[in-house]
Image 1 (cartoon, rainbow, N blue to C red):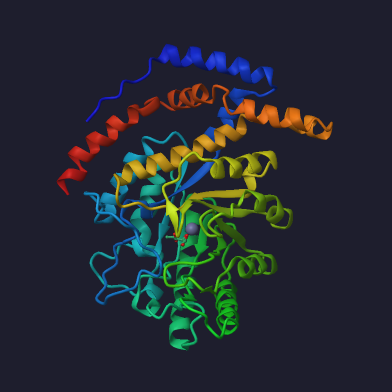
Image 2 (image 1 turned 120 degrees about the horizontal axis):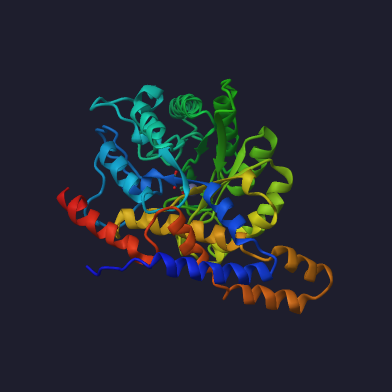
Length: 427
Ligand code: RNT
Ligand code: ZN
């Protein structure tokens, strides 16, 4: 494997000073941007580490519920200790304030089969301890898929009362776990509810499942918990594998539900029409809602979960959040999985890309652009937007990596290769 040289500290500092002067001339404070970047939490999803497998003891064949990781890169984490080790490795290569986002299937039950409606905080004790020891706050998700009672394609919206009530109990069990996690970390644990429910082809009843989903969510939320620690969010989707024609929890459904019930709306960047982007939705939704949950992802054709890269879509989302001063009202989380490349690399690439997009937005001369726009100088505004694209953004990013004691530039790849050889390669 190639060895990437680390950039010289003095060269990085000198480039930063020159970049900073350029930003200053546009009215942008690069030091202030770096301070915000260092303090903005990003919730990294655990499921990139093992292809959304989880560690459940299961006896029957299950349907993935539209969740399918493709690829067989060696070294997938096979248990929670390996997953924690891998996540820690990835965290060490990401210059950000990171949280960790767990799913119910990552419970540790010591080889015992524990049904999902019987899960309790005790099954997440090691995760909670790990979070505390590493200063990493946790977020959580019930797992409404990959289970025999999800094989029909319906969970919370099922017409079978046994199935529906099982999933309601699972949701409640998970909310209790989230509250305990929140209490342990002295701040909210965001619990996101996503269900795969839907139909492949032209259901004649689109109404019943939605009424049942509303009822199920209401039953789950009726359990009194401290919302300072358990913060509920609901996530929509347009279509999935096996639910191409109809998804019960659509955008309109959850937008309405979140508004009526005062829960957080989750916007996943990969869950809309293939050419539909979400940056224009932020100012609309946040005009009425206190906060949102963001799943930063990258849709490619029919897949909603490619590894995030520093592209226009992600930049536009962060530009909107910064322009609207809405970072504090946005729970930033990641959602992608790729089993065909080094999984630690996938985590690091995706998360660093999100941090870059955030930094890019923080370095925008928004004040100046706004004034030009207000003055009717629209050509000037468009020109300045274009000019900002070639400002020395990379020099500021390098400085951030250096500040956080991380390898600058592609030098982090050396660490990834070494871990691949010494750890992943032995699994
Ligand atoms: C699925 C949703 C959901 C999942 C995770 C694993 O389409 O995006 O967020 O990816 O819960
Ligand atoms: Zn998602």
